[in-house]
Length: 196
Ligand code: UDP
Ligand code: MG
Image 1: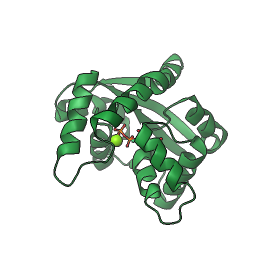
Image 2: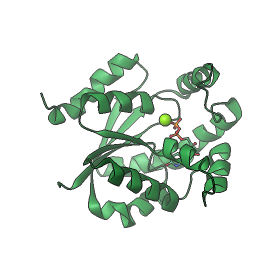
Image 3: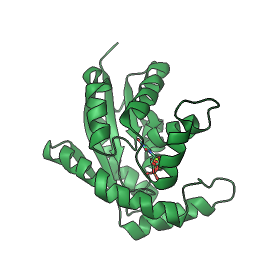
Image 4: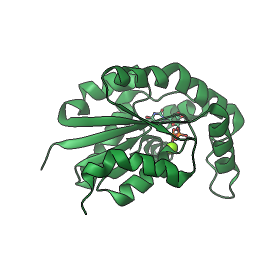
């Protein structure tokens, strides 16, 4: 099988990473893997060795150690049997990046980093709408945790994005547009994977 290929998708909480990743995966031959979703699942797995640590990180808006997240990502990649992946919400800081580089990084090509950005107020509004949506709310979509998540994004994830920027690996996407318009912009970076 061909060498595995990955696109990292980063951006502030609530900017629409998950929504756009689902659209990309539907249109192109990429498997969407949400790091946050894998951690939320692992947190609920009975007898998980890391459940409590994951739970406290998520509640505090902190970043789970790479060792845990990378294992979950790798397992999911292997299980898919595919070779192109969108990794949504990872790596979030330098520790994550180093952890990736020294483990999976040797076996996978990172094609580029899709950075979807929007003003903080817009992201808060989107998260609050999602949190309030009947039955579909995420337990960390409340204003107290959200403020912590945004801080973590600014303090830790933005420098990580800057690092990739210096390597010319970042594709910047304005996320402050309607869903379909954002997707139109994203498509330009995935045209080369079009199978039609
Ligand atoms: N998280 C983490 N490492 C990751 C991805 C997520 O520690 O690689 C944790 C972190 O506490 C974060 C939460 O999971 O605040 C939710 O992440 P997710 O990406 O699902 O939220 P989003 O940024 O999409 O709103
Ligand atoms: Mg998400």
